[in-house]
Image 1: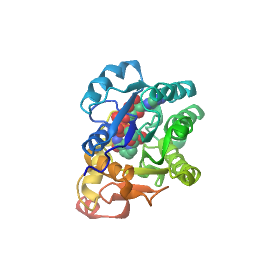
Image 2: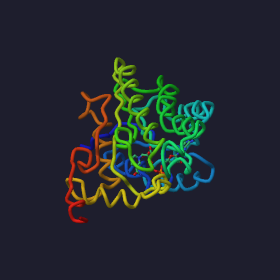
Image 3: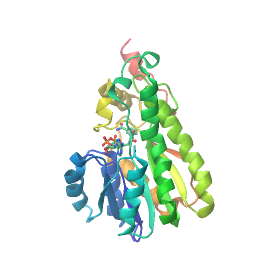
Length: 264
Ligand code: NAD
Protein backbone atom coordinates (compact mmCIF):
# COMPACT_ATOMS: atom_id res chain seq x y z
CA UNK A 1 0.00 0.00 0.00
CA UNK A 2 1.16 3.53 -0.75
CA UNK A 3 2.64 5.28 2.29
CA UNK A 4 0.65 8.50 1.98
CA UNK A 5 -2.77 7.46 0.75
CA UNK A 6 -5.50 9.57 2.39
CA UNK A 7 -3.00 12.34 3.24
CA UNK A 8 -3.52 15.88 2.01
CA UNK A 9 -0.33 17.94 1.81
CA UNK A 10 0.24 21.56 0.81
CA UNK A 11 3.48 22.15 -1.13
CA UNK A 12 5.04 25.63 -1.19
CA UNK A 13 8.17 26.74 -3.05
CA UNK A 14 7.86 25.37 -6.58
CA UNK A 15 9.51 27.75 -9.04
CA UNK A 16 10.18 25.16 -11.77
CA UNK A 17 10.77 21.45 -12.25
CA UNK A 18 14.27 21.71 -10.77
CA UNK A 19 12.93 23.06 -7.46
CA UNK A 20 13.44 20.84 -4.43
CA UNK A 21 9.70 21.26 -3.77
CA UNK A 22 9.03 19.72 -7.19
CA UNK A 23 11.14 16.65 -6.30
CA UNK A 24 9.27 16.37 -3.02
CA UNK A 25 5.90 16.68 -4.81
CA UNK A 26 6.93 13.85 -7.16
CA UNK A 27 7.68 11.54 -4.23
CA UNK A 28 4.56 12.52 -2.25
CA UNK A 29 2.38 11.98 -5.32
CA UNK A 30 3.98 8.59 -6.03
CA UNK A 31 3.01 7.51 -2.50
CA UNK A 32 -0.63 8.50 -2.99
CA UNK A 33 -0.82 11.93 -1.31
CA UNK A 34 -3.36 14.47 -2.51
CA UNK A 35 -1.50 17.73 -3.15
CA UNK A 36 -2.20 21.46 -3.24
CA UNK A 37 0.33 24.09 -4.30
CA UNK A 38 1.22 27.70 -3.73
CA UNK A 39 3.06 30.08 -6.03
CA UNK A 40 4.92 33.23 -5.08
CA UNK A 41 4.31 35.76 -7.86
CA UNK A 42 1.88 36.12 -10.77
CA UNK A 43 4.82 35.39 -13.07
CA UNK A 44 4.97 31.86 -11.63
CA UNK A 45 1.22 31.24 -11.64
CA UNK A 46 0.88 29.57 -15.06
CA UNK A 47 4.06 27.53 -14.62
CA UNK A 48 2.95 26.14 -11.25
CA UNK A 49 -0.55 25.51 -12.61
CA UNK A 50 0.98 23.49 -15.46
CA UNK A 51 3.33 21.58 -13.16
CA UNK A 52 0.48 20.79 -10.75
CA UNK A 53 -1.22 18.82 -13.53
CA UNK A 54 1.62 16.27 -13.25
CA UNK A 55 0.27 15.58 -9.77
CA UNK A 56 -3.45 15.50 -10.67
CA UNK A 57 -4.00 18.65 -8.62
CA UNK A 58 -6.12 21.66 -9.46
CA UNK A 59 -5.50 23.50 -6.19
CA UNK A 60 -2.96 26.20 -6.96
CA UNK A 61 -3.09 29.32 -4.78
CA UNK A 62 -1.03 32.50 -4.47
CA UNK A 63 1.07 33.16 -1.38
CA UNK A 64 3.77 35.75 -0.85
CA UNK A 65 5.00 34.94 2.66
CA UNK A 66 6.25 38.49 3.20
CA UNK A 67 2.61 39.52 3.78
CA UNK A 68 0.58 38.14 6.72
CA UNK A 69 -2.61 39.02 4.85
CA UNK A 70 -1.48 36.85 1.93
CA UNK A 71 -0.79 33.89 4.23
CA UNK A 72 -4.21 34.32 5.88
CA UNK A 73 -5.94 34.55 2.49
CA UNK A 74 -4.21 31.34 1.37
CA UNK A 75 -5.99 29.39 4.09
CA UNK A 76 -9.35 31.09 3.53
CA UNK A 77 -9.10 29.88 -0.07
CA UNK A 78 -7.69 26.42 0.78
CA UNK A 79 -10.51 25.93 3.30
CA UNK A 80 -12.97 26.09 0.41
CA UNK A 81 -11.38 22.84 -0.92
CA UNK A 82 -9.95 21.16 2.19
CA UNK A 83 -11.45 21.72 5.65
CA UNK A 84 -8.51 19.84 7.18
CA UNK A 85 -5.15 18.66 5.88
CA UNK A 86 -2.14 16.62 6.99
CA UNK A 87 0.75 19.03 6.72
CA UNK A 88 2.83 21.23 4.48
CA UNK A 89 6.22 21.48 2.83
CA UNK A 90 8.00 24.77 3.49
CA UNK A 91 10.56 25.18 0.68
CA UNK A 92 10.94 28.95 0.73
CA UNK A 93 14.06 31.04 1.20
CA UNK A 94 15.30 34.41 0.08
CA UNK A 95 18.26 36.74 0.60
CA UNK A 96 19.22 39.62 -1.69
CA UNK A 97 21.98 38.50 -4.08
CA UNK A 98 24.37 41.17 -2.77
CA UNK A 99 24.28 39.36 0.59
CA UNK A 100 25.47 36.08 -0.93
CA UNK A 101 28.87 37.18 -2.10
CA UNK A 102 32.09 38.42 -0.51
CA UNK A 103 33.08 38.81 3.10
CA UNK A 104 30.16 38.27 5.52
CA UNK A 105 30.94 41.17 7.81
CA UNK A 106 31.43 43.60 4.92
CA UNK A 107 28.32 42.59 3.00
CA UNK A 108 25.70 42.01 5.70
CA UNK A 109 23.21 44.85 6.16
CA UNK A 110 20.36 45.35 8.60
CA UNK A 111 17.92 45.24 5.69
CA UNK A 112 19.42 42.05 4.21
CA UNK A 113 19.50 40.42 7.64
CA UNK A 114 15.87 41.26 8.38
CA UNK A 115 14.54 40.27 4.96
CA UNK A 116 16.36 36.93 4.84
CA UNK A 117 15.16 35.98 8.33
CA UNK A 118 11.57 37.06 7.67
CA UNK A 119 11.21 35.18 4.40
CA UNK A 120 13.38 32.15 5.16
CA UNK A 121 12.60 31.48 8.84
CA UNK A 122 9.59 33.44 10.16
CA UNK A 123 7.47 32.25 7.24
CA UNK A 124 7.66 28.64 8.49
CA UNK A 125 5.96 29.44 11.78
CA UNK A 126 3.87 32.17 10.10
CA UNK A 127 2.26 29.56 7.84
CA UNK A 128 1.84 27.09 10.74
CA UNK A 129 0.21 29.80 12.86
CA UNK A 130 -2.30 30.62 10.13
CA UNK A 131 -3.35 27.01 9.41
CA UNK A 132 -3.00 25.46 12.88
CA UNK A 133 -6.75 24.94 13.23
CA UNK A 134 -6.95 23.15 9.88
CA UNK A 135 -4.19 20.62 10.65
CA UNK A 136 -5.15 17.05 11.56
CA UNK A 137 -3.97 15.50 14.82
CA UNK A 138 -1.22 13.54 13.08
CA UNK A 139 -0.06 16.31 10.75
CA UNK A 140 3.59 16.71 9.78
CA UNK A 141 5.40 19.91 8.77
CA UNK A 142 8.67 19.77 6.85
CA UNK A 143 11.11 22.56 5.99
CA UNK A 144 14.40 22.66 4.07
CA UNK A 145 17.66 23.80 5.58
CA UNK A 146 21.39 23.72 4.87
CA UNK A 147 24.62 22.93 6.73
CA UNK A 148 25.49 26.64 6.52
CA UNK A 149 23.30 26.93 9.65
CA UNK A 150 25.96 25.02 11.59
CA UNK A 151 29.19 25.93 9.80
CA UNK A 152 30.40 29.27 8.50
CA UNK A 153 30.23 28.60 4.77
CA UNK A 154 31.86 30.96 2.25
CA UNK A 155 29.33 33.21 0.48
CA UNK A 156 26.31 31.62 2.22
CA UNK A 157 26.69 34.48 4.67
CA UNK A 158 23.46 35.83 6.19
CA UNK A 159 21.48 32.88 4.78
CA UNK A 160 23.43 30.68 7.22
CA UNK A 161 22.06 32.75 10.09
CA UNK A 162 18.54 32.56 8.66
CA UNK A 163 18.87 28.76 8.40
CA UNK A 164 20.13 28.60 12.01
CA UNK A 165 17.01 30.52 12.98
CA UNK A 166 14.87 28.16 10.87
CA UNK A 167 16.37 25.12 12.64
CA UNK A 168 15.65 26.64 16.07
CA UNK A 169 12.17 27.51 14.79
CA UNK A 170 11.71 23.81 13.88
CA UNK A 171 12.51 22.77 17.47
CA UNK A 172 10.27 25.43 19.07
CA UNK A 173 7.40 24.63 16.71
CA UNK A 174 7.83 20.89 17.39
CA UNK A 175 7.63 21.51 21.12
CA UNK A 176 4.61 23.80 20.85
CA UNK A 177 2.62 21.66 18.40
CA UNK A 178 3.66 18.21 19.64
CA UNK A 179 0.98 17.93 22.34
CA UNK A 180 -1.65 18.00 19.57
CA UNK A 181 0.22 15.25 17.69
CA UNK A 182 1.70 17.56 15.08
CA UNK A 183 5.33 16.87 14.19
CA UNK A 184 7.80 19.40 12.78
CA UNK A 185 11.11 18.46 11.15
CA UNK A 186 13.72 19.86 8.78
CA UNK A 187 15.67 18.22 5.99
CA UNK A 188 19.20 19.58 5.68
CA UNK A 189 20.18 18.79 2.14
CA UNK A 190 23.37 18.96 0.15
CA UNK A 191 23.68 21.46 -2.71
CA UNK A 192 21.25 21.15 -5.61
CA UNK A 193 21.32 23.35 -8.72
CA UNK A 194 18.11 25.41 -8.52
CA UNK A 195 16.99 28.99 -9.12
CA UNK A 196 17.66 29.93 -5.49
CA UNK A 197 21.10 28.31 -5.34
CA UNK A 198 22.19 30.01 -8.57
CA UNK A 199 22.36 33.25 -6.54
CA UNK A 200 25.16 31.88 -4.32
CA UNK A 201 28.66 32.78 -5.49
CA UNK A 202 30.88 29.79 -6.36
CA UNK A 203 27.96 27.37 -6.15
CA UNK A 204 29.55 25.14 -8.84
CA UNK A 205 32.60 24.75 -6.60
CA UNK A 206 30.33 23.72 -3.76
CA UNK A 207 28.81 20.96 -5.93
CA UNK A 208 32.29 19.75 -6.85
CA UNK A 209 33.42 19.81 -3.24
CA UNK A 210 30.47 17.62 -2.18
CA UNK A 211 31.05 15.27 -5.09
CA UNK A 212 34.68 14.78 -4.07
CA UNK A 213 34.37 14.79 -0.29
CA UNK A 214 30.99 13.20 0.60
CA UNK A 215 31.24 9.59 1.74
CA UNK A 216 29.02 8.60 -1.22
CA UNK A 217 31.23 10.66 -3.62
CA UNK A 218 28.37 12.26 -5.52
CA UNK A 219 25.75 14.95 -5.18
CA UNK A 220 22.24 14.12 -4.05
CA UNK A 221 19.08 14.46 -6.16
CA UNK A 222 15.72 16.13 -5.52
CA UNK A 223 14.15 12.65 -5.65
CA UNK A 224 16.33 11.55 -2.73
CA UNK A 225 15.17 14.57 -0.75
CA UNK A 226 11.58 13.76 -1.75
CA UNK A 227 11.90 10.23 -0.45
CA UNK A 228 12.95 11.45 2.99
CA UNK A 229 10.02 13.87 2.93
CA UNK A 230 7.72 10.88 2.27
CA UNK A 231 9.13 9.23 5.40
CA UNK A 232 8.58 12.40 7.45
CA UNK A 233 4.99 12.81 6.26
CA UNK A 234 4.22 9.12 6.77
CA UNK A 235 3.28 7.37 9.98
CA UNK A 236 6.63 5.51 9.77
CA UNK A 237 8.24 8.59 11.38
CA UNK A 238 5.55 9.03 14.06
CA UNK A 239 8.16 9.08 16.85
CA UNK A 240 10.34 11.77 15.27
CA UNK A 241 9.92 15.51 15.78
CA UNK A 242 12.11 18.60 16.09
CA UNK A 243 14.91 16.90 14.15
CA UNK A 244 17.25 18.11 11.44
CA UNK A 245 17.70 15.15 9.07
CA UNK A 246 20.69 15.34 6.73
CA UNK A 247 20.29 14.28 3.11
CA UNK A 248 23.77 15.22 1.96
CA UNK A 249 25.50 11.94 1.17
CA UNK A 250 27.12 12.12 4.60
CA UNK A 251 29.09 15.31 3.85
CA UNK A 252 28.39 16.72 7.32
CA UNK A 253 29.92 13.73 9.16
CA UNK A 254 33.10 13.34 7.13
CA UNK A 255 36.39 15.11 6.83
CA UNK A 256 37.93 13.72 3.67
CA UNK A 257 41.26 15.26 2.79
CA UNK A 258 42.03 13.22 -0.36
CA UNK A 259 41.11 16.16 -2.53
CA UNK A 260 43.54 18.45 -0.73
CA UNK A 261 46.32 15.84 -0.91
CA UNK A 262 45.83 15.50 -4.66
CA UNK A 263 46.29 19.21 -5.18
CA UNK A 264 49.53 19.34 -3.12
P1 NAD B 1 13.88 27.37 -5.74
O1 NAD B 1 14.34 28.68 -6.26
O2 NAD B 1 13.43 26.37 -6.71
O3 NAD B 1 12.77 27.56 -4.60
C1 NAD B 1 12.76 28.66 -3.73
C2 NAD B 1 11.31 29.09 -3.65
O4 NAD B 1 11.14 30.13 -2.68
C3 NAD B 1 10.79 29.64 -4.99
O5 NAD B 1 9.69 28.88 -5.42
C4 NAD B 1 10.37 31.07 -4.65
O6 NAD B 1 9.26 31.48 -5.40
C5 NAD B 1 10.07 30.92 -3.16
N1 NAD B 1 9.99 32.22 -2.48
C6 NAD B 1 10.98 33.14 -2.34
N2 NAD B 1 10.48 34.24 -1.71
C7 NAD B 1 9.17 33.97 -1.45
C8 NAD B 1 8.12 34.71 -0.84
N3 NAD B 1 8.30 35.96 -0.39
N4 NAD B 1 6.89 34.13 -0.75
C9 NAD B 1 6.67 32.89 -1.21
N5 NAD B 1 7.63 32.14 -1.82
C10 NAD B 1 8.86 32.68 -1.93
O7 NAD B 1 15.14 26.82 -4.88
P2 NAD B 1 15.31 25.54 -3.96
O8 NAD B 1 16.78 25.34 -3.89
O9 NAD B 1 14.44 24.45 -4.39
O10 NAD B 1 14.87 26.09 -2.52
C11 NAD B 1 13.92 25.44 -1.70
C12 NAD B 1 14.43 25.40 -0.26
O11 NAD B 1 15.53 24.48 -0.18
C13 NAD B 1 14.95 26.73 0.28
O12 NAD B 1 14.57 26.86 1.62
C14 NAD B 1 16.45 26.54 0.18
O13 NAD B 1 17.18 27.36 1.08
C15 NAD B 1 16.55 25.09 0.57
N6 NAD B 1 17.84 24.47 0.26
C16 NAD B 1 18.32 24.50 -1.01
C17 NAD B 1 19.55 23.92 -1.28
C18 NAD B 1 20.12 23.97 -2.67
O14 NAD B 1 21.32 23.69 -2.83
N7 NAD B 1 19.35 24.27 -3.68
C19 NAD B 1 20.28 23.29 -0.26
C20 NAD B 1 19.75 23.27 1.02
C21 NAD B 1 18.52 23.86 1.28
